[in-house]
Image: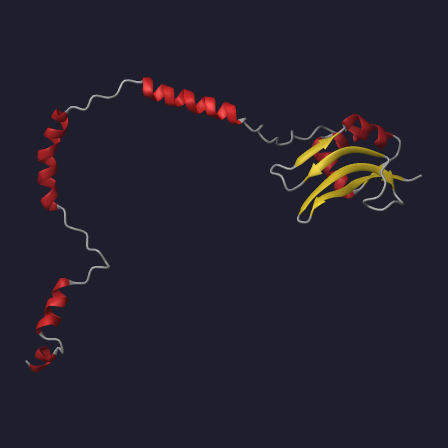
Length: 171
């Protein structure tokens, strides 16, 4: 019997999830499998790849042929290199474990308590009073920014005196 290690598609539309299975090469893609040896979820970030390494090594040793997709997955996990006697690849990226809500709440409570326990900084008006004369001198030198939505007041005054603009042409 010709045995293949291949992917069995599961999941929903636009959210594929696969099982890595050992099956007879003559069965359908999603047909009966001899053994389930792992899972692959490509839509997660990073992709979820879990393989039962000793079972895959056994099936490879008895002559099971991996499909191209499964061979790439086995190369990422290092099982293919182990079977062929090659050096191991770099480790896979692993998603950080999700913190529970209680851990997040306790961390926030500690940080809030730490902020409340620190003594408040004393604000002395002496430093502000010394800085006030310098700020008063700097203000006249600054010009007011012109708002682009505000119309030009000089142009409005000219059009109010001579709405048709005939006075400029007549002189």
